[in-house]
Amino acid sequence: MALETGVPAPEVTALNQDGDEVSPAFDETAVVYFYPRDGTPGCTLEAREFEADIESFR
Image 1 (tube, rainbow, N blue to C red):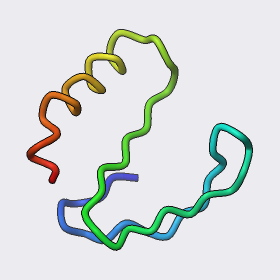
Image 2 (image 1 turned 90 degrees about the vertical axis):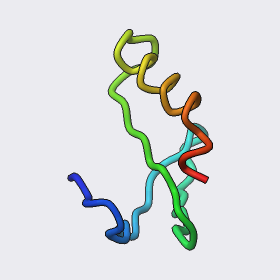
Image 3 (image 1 turned 135 degrees about the vertical axis):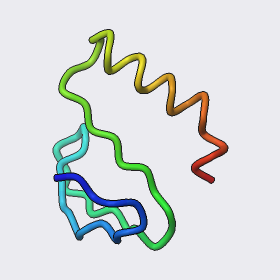
Image 4 (image 1 turned 180 degrees about the vertical axis):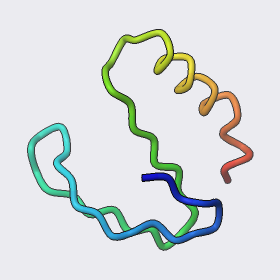
C-alpha cells in the first residue's frame, strides 16, 4: 500500500524482533521502511540512502 506525501498513516500493529506486538504512534513525521530480506544489494543501498539523507526527514 502506497501513501501519498502528507497523508496520515493508518494505525498498525506488528511484531517486533522479540515477537511482541508494537503499535507505533505517528504523532510526528515518520519514515516507515519495509524491505524483503536482510543482506540484499538493493535493500542495503536504499537503507544507506535513507541514512545519508536523514536530515531531510527531520
